[in-house]
Length: 448
Image 1 (cartoon, one colour):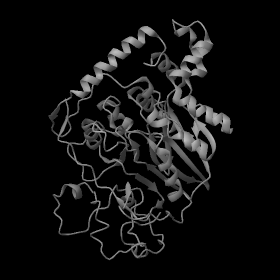
Image 2 (image 1 turned 120 degrees about the horizontal axis):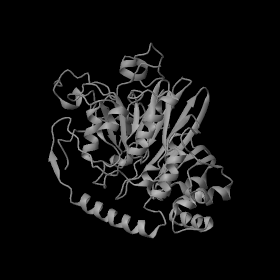
Image 3 (image 1 turned 60 degrees about the vertical axis):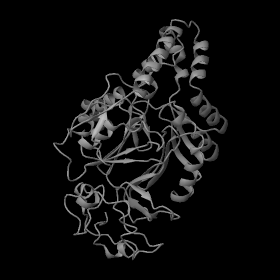
């Protein structure tokens, strides 16, 4: 590994880095500590080991493009405003991992993730969810700029059927040669599930209805079949490149199809519609209350069946566990926690985790976060333990929820939000021209 502590003069000078003895403590920090002696120890951002977002621009007038200041490997970073980003510079290491949470910016939040990694000399590129229709051009441009303009994508992954995850993948499937499209398709199980639907006596009729209500997934299937792209389901225990699917299990997925608000049962649909309307009214009328450090209140009810269908993916990169959650809810996360010992994942101990469902408060609980991330600290820790990255639109004032952000910070997270800008996290590779993201402010209030 390389020394990103600032002692490597070749790195500071913009020259190729020289390998030194590993400095694990500094490499694994979320943001470098400032060396400015004039800053007081009580400064909140510095006390948490965070570096201000402008520390590598206005405070470093001696640096001129194209020479960029070093960024600690593994830090969440963003591109510097107004500067055309150079293609990333690969370091002389066999293995590396990089992931980008793109800024899906509409009135509502969405997910679009690109990632590239090399393990044992095998390099793969994955796209996990594609945001909305307009997000696809952003993904393509990002791949051109930072991933070497590939023509082949090893894996395209749809975590679940919501359009803020699915629609942007259409153009991706049309544009690139794709090794495999990973997604689960409810209609394939129509015959197996027929007996559980009281209003259906024909498997073919149920098949057609499920394709109708999951139209966003059908659209991706149609493109893949026309272009000869293999499609694979993705249940617990399946491999997607070097990633392992932790949830959903096949059994729970089938249960969720039946329980879904999209289920073609007239009586259930009527009740579900009333429930959805009531929840929307409650959410719109939410109030905030002041809360001391460590306080958390989550709603009793969970998230939708569609969100619970989300794929949860795990990768162990060099002993550092990475978890991608999509819109997973409490059931999916509980299933992930229970399955972890089967794949050698010792929880808590994650190094990077995607905040589920853009920071929705119906997706997590204090008990689940204790098991997944560890217990709460008595006060704000001086050093963060892991990165928590949240895909949330700047215009979406409902995400992330304050109580969710508080809960992650209670457990030692460095919390980053996309808010219209990409967030990059890596190991073994750096990206010139990007700057470290400061720690998120701690909300002093939460939803009532």
